[in-house]
Each structure stands twice: as structure tokens, then as C-alpha cells.
Length: 251
Image (cartoon, rainbow, N blue to C red; front, side):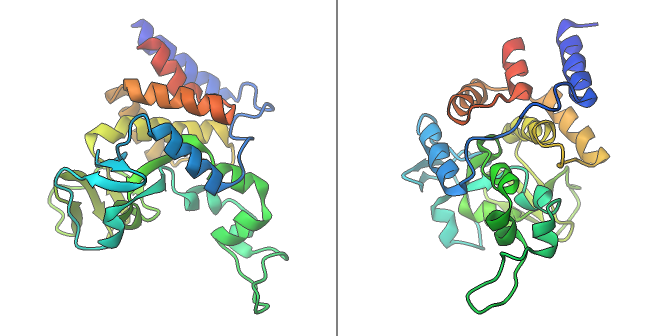
């Protein structure tokens, strides 16, 4: 058995067994999404390219899109936005405040509200998860808008209702509520999903999603930038992403 595979199997086993489960694993530093976004852009100033489409940006505005095109959200195609790789709704719905609201969630007209705004207002753990920089990447705003809260998958080639973005190989099916990312993003996506499940026990992927992410993690190794980004986040946010770190140490 190859040493790399042995290390991979050991890590997965350790995560599954819940080793050191009582210790903080995720973000405990930033509970402000806006603050985390500012730090994200500082980190990406060393590699100012969008996550899915590899478009170049400056001051959050796209300056070279390499043939990107869209017929929707066209104004948002001119700027970058902070994208949650694991959609906020995927872990947000595990919070009672998101599903049912909270006594503090009353608007100026005296009406109760729930959902993301309520969870953000009334639950610090939600704010920490929402602000975790390991799960934040810059994306073209139109792609962020079109992707919504869809999970990633491999879409059938014969499907007619798939939306594409010119030369950017991001594919989105509103019919299936799924998205297929470009090859260059799949490994980092997988390791983000694996990290979120490791760091926050309340977030749990489906069996099918776990299998896909494990496959993408193996098929698409870490890049030099992924390792540098992870190290920069660790220095700022204070917690380690052992999923990425272990792959960087192997490679």
C-alpha cells in the first residue's frame, strides 16, 4: 500500500472517530462576515483571480474575464463577490433561528422574521461558521448569484437546461438545483467541504456528497496557491485546516 494512501486513510479514520472533538476546530476569531470578506480580499491580493472562472480582478472589479459571458445578472458580472463554497443555507438550516426564528428577530414594523438574517443576528456559532475564511472565495458576482445554494455534482451531458458561462466551465442546472464546477476548482471544493464537516459537527454531508468529495480530493491534488492561501488563513483566523495542510505536507 502506497504511503500517500496510508496517510490519507489515517486522516479520514481520525476525523471519523472524533479525535479531540472537545477542542475548537473551526473559526473562533471572526464572527463578522464583512470583516472576513475584507481579510479574504487581502489574502487574494497575492493571487487576484476568481475561484471558478480564473478571471483577474482588482479592487473587487473584474479587469480580465478571459471570455466569460452571461445573459443573467449582467451587472454582477463586472464585480467579484465573496462566495461560500459550502452554501450558508446548507449549514444554516441546522440552526433553530434559521428555521423558526427567535424572539430577538423582530423588524422595525414589529414583524417576526427568520432565515439567514435571524440566525446571523441571534446565534454566534452561526456567525462564526458564516465568517470562516476557509469557506470563502472570490467569485464573479453573476456566478455567485446563479449558483444560489446548489450543491456540486457531475451533470449529465445530454441535459438541455444547463446554464453555461462562455469559456468559464462552470455549469448550473436550475432544474436539478445542482452545479458542476470547472476542473481547476474541484479539488479545493472537495477539501473545503471536508474541512467544514471536520470543523463543525452540526454540518454533515450526505453519503453521496461525501463520496464525490473524497473522489475529487484524490483526483485533483492541492496547488501551490491552495497551500499558501490555507497558511495565510491559519495565521489570520487562528485555526488549522488539517485537510489541506496534510495534503500540502505530502506534496
